[in-house]
Length: 129
Image 1 (cartoon, rainbow, N blue to C red):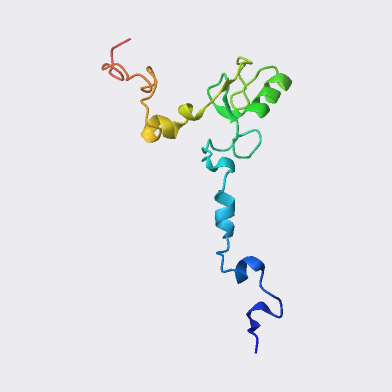
Image 2 (image 1 turned 90 degrees about the horizontal axis):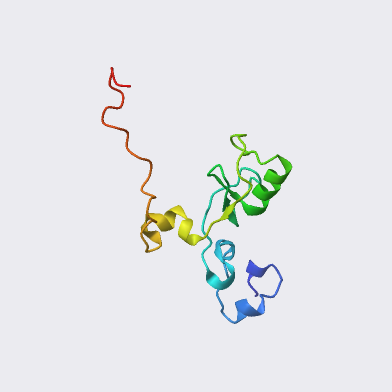
């Protein structure tokens, strides 16, 4: 008697040939060309994953098309701080990604990106001006 597993249906040709089926989790992770797409986080304007990152004059990273449109429609004001900023946006590359700068990309960070300066040694002491 036939197995009840297929509930009266014939298995597909790939199953009959013994080929391994692709799991849904494997489909989701597959990228065109096999290239790994970097995670730039979520754009506050689109509420979606950033695919084409751009840094605005306020220093924050947005989806390129969204920040360009926002600045055009809102008199060059930052969506996060509402201060007037430059209409210029800088397109970011893999080399600008924090994981790349942390050593994941095999290159040292650019000069001058060591972080904020240390406070002076007299910071917070009474009597200094």
